[in-house]
Image (cartoon, rainbow, N blue to C red):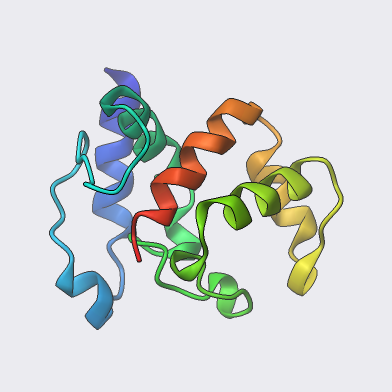
Length: 125
């Protein structure tokens, strides 16, 4: 319950700025199940909770250039997302000089959590 409340607060405070891409998406909140997901409903809920920490930089639907430096990750396929996150986790990647920032973000995630968040983000395109 605590994670759910934190997630809702983050959504409320992270809604700064919008784009035509995010405006075209329906924001249905926790338990949104996208049709092209290979995640289970439980995995998508977990991924949404994890992705709440990513929205500040990447946008609600991964439509932003993080810190005005990175590429837009909603255009990536899930294997590329997963590889990038694993590479950041294991300090094998420093794209755009964001290696330290991203390593800090993914360091606490298991490889399984990285897999489900990769599938979740890949749904946005």
